[in-house]
Each structure stands twice: as structure tokens, then as C-alpha cells.
Amino acid sequence: MAAAVSRLAIVLVLLAGAAAAQSGPGLDCAKAAAAIERAVCSKPELLAADRRMAVAYAALLGKLAGAARDHLAADQARWLVNRDKACVGEPAEVEDCLDGRYRDRSARLEWLGDGPYPFISDQAIVRAGKVRGIPYVIDANYPQFDATTPDFAAVNRQLASTTSEAADRVLPGPDADNAGGNYSGPAWTYEQAYTLHRPGPNAISVYIRFDSYEGGAHGTVGVSGFLVDLRTGRAIGPEAVFAPTAPWLLELTRIVSADITAPNLSELLKEARRYVFLEDRLELSFNPYEGGPYTVEIPYDRLRPLLRTDGPVPR
Image (cartoon, rainbow, N blue to C red; front, side, top):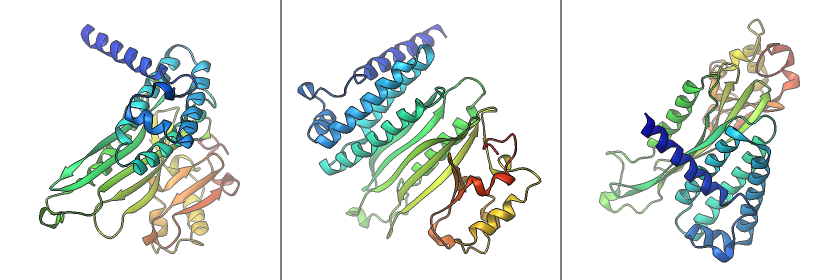
């Protein structure tokens, strides 16, 4: 046990040291040695994005102390490691990867500094290779709730397993057409990113966006929602947001039917993954085969009478 604690302490020190390397104004291009650093320094737009992120990180780090400061430093170091693993390939691919990663990280650092520090870390599955001659690339990010109370273990298992299962689906199987070993098509890919939102003081909403290609004529793009009650540490669905006696399903069906023509709409609206509770509105997601746009937006002002008085979205 003592040896395990010692190893953990060493890891935390190393991670914090790596993060400290970018706690200042950003990369020093005169000292850029790694390929990823040279790629950033070669493009003024990427260098500006790196500096914006470094400023956001330093500003947040300066607000924190103790366990919160250590948590952020370790999270930043992990992000840097995953950035270096994910942003490889042709120059244009590296630039696109860096641009998206810096944009997302800067926004998340700013969000983390808005209110009490929530102890949420960024996790990633980054893999690439070939199966039977078919290349695949996985770059999937998801959050992990690291606060010790309440117990977020079930939430974290669900977020990790859902991401892992989606990523595994793009690994070519034994029946995948590899053109007799001469496959020359695009790589099979799974990309996933997320943003965090506070629809109320007692909840955090995870807005997940994904882009998947598993062979065939075209890929799949979609979104899903994941709402966490900070009082219990549990994932909750719409039934925990709306009052039990309110006809919320009937009303949502009525509102959404103006845009979505699916005959089983009321059944679709029972699926929690469709609900993304943002700061000022509810977004409901549907795929193109369900008869409408990807999302339907409903301001909370239209839903106030249906909400629980003590729920995660304030009435």
C-alpha cells in the first residue's frame, strides 16, 4: 500500500511539473524542440491559440490552492500528453487537431473558473493502427468527476464505458471489406468532444458531440446529453427535472412535433440521452432518419411550470 501511495505521489509530481512548463505565457518558440511544438510555432494562429490557453490556465491556477490547484495541474499535464498523442499525421491534420484542441481547452479552463472549482478532469482515448490493412484513428474525450463526495463512481464508469464502446465500434471486424488486403479508402475514425454546462447550481450537464466513420458511403455525426446531480453524484434523466405530476412528456411531444415527424415521437422523448440541459434552454437531439433537424431548442421560459421546484434546473 505504501509503495502504491509513493508511486502515485511521484506521478502527481511529474504531471504537475509538466503542466508548470506551460503555466506562463505559452510556448517559447526559440526553445521549441518537439515536433508538436514546432508545428505550433510554425503557424501564427496556433501560437496565438496556445498563448490564449496558457493565459486561461495561469489565471485559473492563480485562483486555486491546495487540492484544487494540484488537481488542475495534473489535469493540464494530462491534456498536454493527450494533445501530443492525438495531433500527429500530415501537417494539415496536425493543424486541424491543434486548432480544435486549443479552442476546446481554453473554453473549458474559462468554464472551470466560473464558480466553485468542480474537480472535473479531462480524459481521453487516443489510439491509431491497422486491422487487416484498414487504418483506424480514435480520438475521444470525456469528463471524469473527481470530487470525493458525493460518490461519482457510477457516473464515471458510465461515461468511460460509453466512450470506450463507441470507440471500439470503429475497429474493423473480421467481416470488414479490406479489398483483399489492398484497402485504399479512408481511415475508420471515432472522434468525440464535449462541453460542460451549469443549468442550475446543483447540476452539471455534459454535452457530447461525436463523429464516426465505420466504412461505407458516409459517416455518422451526432450529439448526446448526460446530466449529473451534484447532490447525489448520480446521472439523472428528464423525470428528475420535471415535476412528477406535470404533463411534461405530452407538452414536449406537442412542441417538438412542429419540427420532428417521427410517428413514435413520445417514445423517443423518453430517452435521456436526447436531453441536453444548457444554461438557458433545453436542446433535444434527433438523427436525420427521425424526420427532422438534429436539434430542437426550447427556452426554459416555456418549461417553467413543468419543472420541479427543488430540481436540478431551477423553476
